[in-house]
Image 1 (cartoon, rainbow, N blue to C red):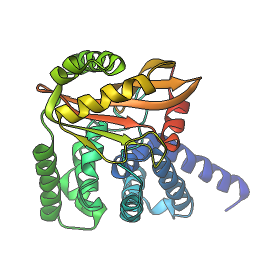
Image 2: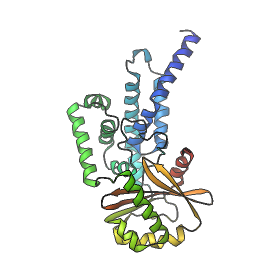
Image 3: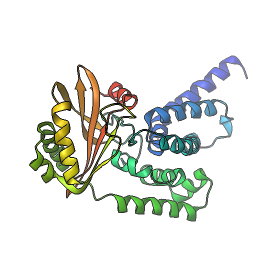
Length: 298
């Protein structure tokens, strides 16, 4: 093959990869809960695509999705071990969905921070099967081929994941109700208003602060309406004065970016059902906040 042919072939390989990229990122991110790790997976998938006999590949996007899913599962298995030594609660790394509300998928499933957090409890193969079915709508047999298992086993994997999520999470509120309750919660948290906090929090609410060991972030989850209300009220006079608030979008939901002296210090998001605020999630680890802030659109 001549130099010109080789260049044309690489140009076509690049075009195909870039067209598939949003979907590939969406798969890797949902399996890993980390945008940084998902980007690493895409780098590896690109290298493999360059070194593949592409003439033998009938469906390039399906091939790339399979490579990406398998690489993500392998990385998720080692990431689980690393996360066991993480200091304090681990929360998924938020992503801005302003430009791509579904993040490369057919549906915006398995994207919500609360869902990604709960998916951490599944093994990586169960998680991948659930993601490929619920977000990307792949047929069961195709998922089975991607995961190198049987169709019957794939159906079981997806079913187990669904049961886990429905047991752990109540039906989420509508987007309008979610935003409204987050606004009420934010004002009450800023002012330390115990009665309003107790009114909007569910009895078994849990507050998670992911600081990766940094000072000021609670290293254990705070559980229950009374404890979370008192924690937020005690926290208010130390945390909120001098901060700037920016409404943002993270993982398809409204979120609040809190900055101090121009630097982001926390991304606040909540999981809301008809009962009220079920989970409060504070992403404070700079390694997770910095890429999110850099990616914000508009």
